[in-house]
Amino acid sequence: MFQFDGRVVLVTGGSRGIGRACCEVFARQGATVVVNYVKNEEAARATAQAITASGGRSDVARFDVADSSAVDGAVDILIKRHGRIDVLIANAGIVTDNLLGRLKDADFDALWATNVRGAVACARAVSKSMMRARWGRIVFVSSVVGEMGNAGQTAYAATKAALFGAAKSIARELASRNVTANVVAPGFIDTDMTVAFTEEQREEMLQGVPLGRTGTGAEVAAACVYLASDEAAYVTGQVLRVNGGMYV
Image: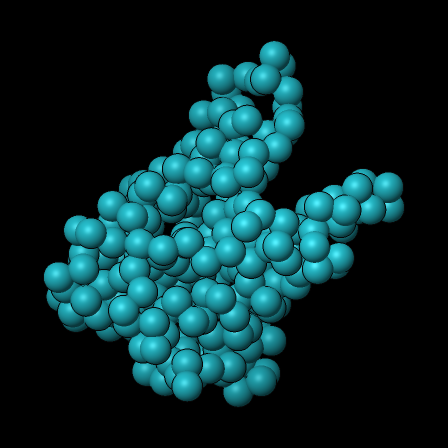
């Protein structure tokens, strides 16, 4: 179950956090995993090396998802190198918090460029190969904040909410070619960002999580693996929430 032998998986923002967890889990399931990064080459190569050291297959690709031309060029190179891209995990994202009255247009534009336009650009680029193959899986990594909102995160929440509509539309467009599009919406997950929280902040967040703990990157990755699998062939246009009951 959930085998990816012979499949090629592109994970954007794959050098750390949820992205790295996705890379490692897909590799264990037999996929060739392409680790995308934009700045931290050391972390990306460390991820790739960990995969190969465990007997898996990996590649590294540097491009900024916010640059559509760079996305198109990189995807073309990857398809020539590997023959195709079967699965896209659009995980790359940035966070900038500010109260509404202090929200700057430049910050909103940067969030939109990476979190939304970048995810859609990647989906557009890989969709051509997927349609030709008549098989493909597109998974957007959103956030519980996109559904429930959060003070100080108006712009971030808007970008994460936009992914729901994008995935549903893509799902309708590509269904006839056996290409699915879905969303994973994580809640309070242990990542580099949440590690920086104070103990008081963590306790406050956990009060809103019925399961009473933070989630792990591996738990989010497991949801991505399911949606990308043959077993999820009849699942498209859906949101899979991995949030410990934080939003139901």
